[in-house]
Amino acid sequence: MRSLQFTAASSSNGLIERDFTVGDIPGVLWSPASRTTAGPAPLVLMGHGGGNHKKHPAMSGRAQRLVTGCGFHVAVIDAPGHGDRPRTAYDEAEIAELFRARAAGEPEGPIVVRYNDHLAQLAVPEYRATLDALQELPEIGAHGPVGFWGINMGTAIGVPFVAVEPRVTAAVFGQHWPDVLAEQAKRITVPIEFDMQWDDEHISREEGLALFDAFASKEKSLHVNSGRHKELPRFEADSAVRFFARHLTSPGTVAAPA
Image 1 (cartoon, rainbow, N blue to C red):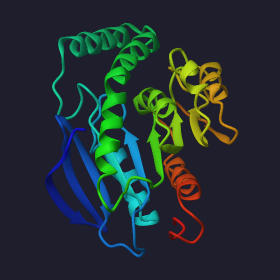
Image 2: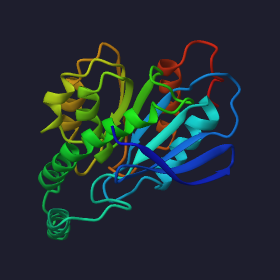
Image 3: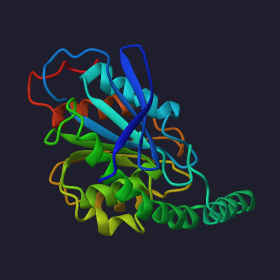
Image 4: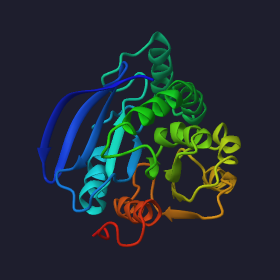
């Protein structure tokens, strides 16, 4: 098992933020500055979007909601070739091809699907190793509830991760193509909340619905909003927090999120 090492810590706005490494994987763990109940608290692992990093405002904003609203722990690791991790020649070539297609007005989907699948093959074992290490912490524990939250590239990594990881008991996904992920989604039976944009210029309605339909979960909710790819409403983050509060806690163990 790879050991977890904390490398920096700070505290503000009710959160403790701790940078860590698991082997050579850099990550961040947000935890409540004070606990209102004794014992371990649920953990939500998150996956960041393509071209972003573990402390992107979308990640820290979602963590703030989960930590201060629910008393959860939240962790994110940098995906391969992102954040504090160096890019390989393959990363550089795929990114250049994406920018070329974008400038030419060509579809981005085939490139993103291929590249994200490559990253997922590397990242899934890293997330499993990170979960192993985090569950060694007494404030999280080996048997507590675990959720996963990832949109866009976070879905590309999260779907294959949740498909093979029985410790994850609820997940929020969205905004990705079904090409590679649909077969893996068929193996997922935990509760799912899924976001898509009705006017997404990259992912068609049919593609978004196909991925949602592929999940084998008996409980799954489809959240569709008008707007383009990058216009996912911020209130969907609040909905995701309520979703995790329902599925990762017993009644009365945490305060209801605002």
